[in-house]
Length: 124
Image (cartoon, rainbow, N blue to C red; front, side, top):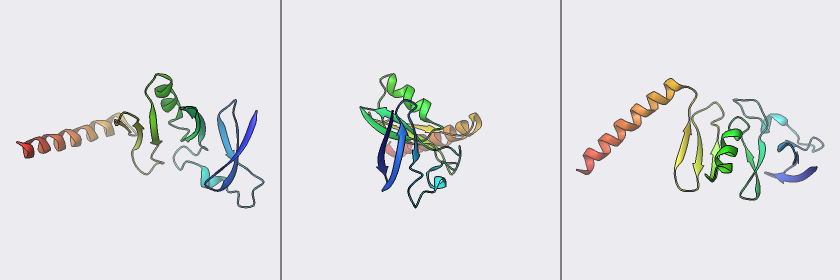
């Protein structure tokens, strides 16, 4: 089954069986590059979250899907598009940060712990 809609004013269509969407190529302003992630070079994926179809960056769509299917509801996400950290905002207020490597995660962890330590000292 294929459905059509609009996104950011542009006609789009997506295959509800595959949950993949593409800009409608018959539109005169069609430019696939506008829709592609600069990092993974893929078009967004459509996932049903909370009963609504949502556009999710393809490179993090499996994580977002697994969280929601596991009962951890998400409300926003972005892969970072190769410009910075990605993130997945959870409905309960927590946020997951996505970095490119284990080493980058450890560096970020050190910065966060140092920040929290300083913040705690300021509150004493």
